[in-house]
Amino acid sequence: MAGGIDQNQLDALFTAALEAAVARIEKDGTFFPLLFELRVTGSIQNVAVLESGAIDGQQTVLDRFAEVLRSRIAEGLVAAAAIVVHRQTEDMVEVQLRATNYSANVFAPYGMETSGFLARKRQLSLGAFIVRPAPNEIF
Image (tube, rainbow, N blue to C red; front, side):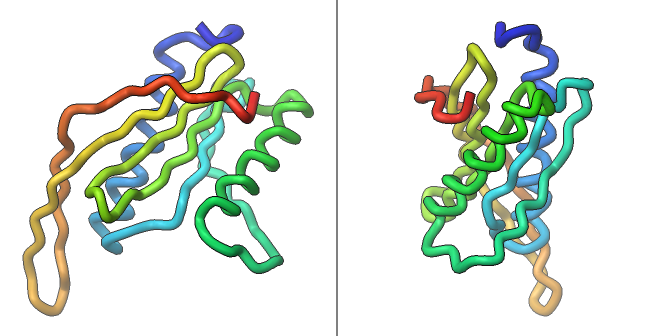
């Protein structure tokens, strides 16, 4: 596995990222990309990246996340990371998992039921995950 990281740690990182994405979709209907770190201490943290400059499109946000992660990895703080993207037009959540010797994108298709007229309530049901190897541009 990925440089001292075991499968249970990667699973916990994936689960935390996916659960946060589901909660955001159920609450707001969509979300901006999210960043989670598995710290070398073993804790999982959601990271807020405050950007003072203008951001033109989603790709620049993902590039900024990668830049932030690279510096934190170089400092010895981060052992693995998950970047979560909402692919709203495809009814899918993508979790990009990265570690030293592991890199995959996990796609989680979902169905959504909505109810309520004024107070919109959403309930997601996840489909089968699709795991694809991906280039590791972070570690």
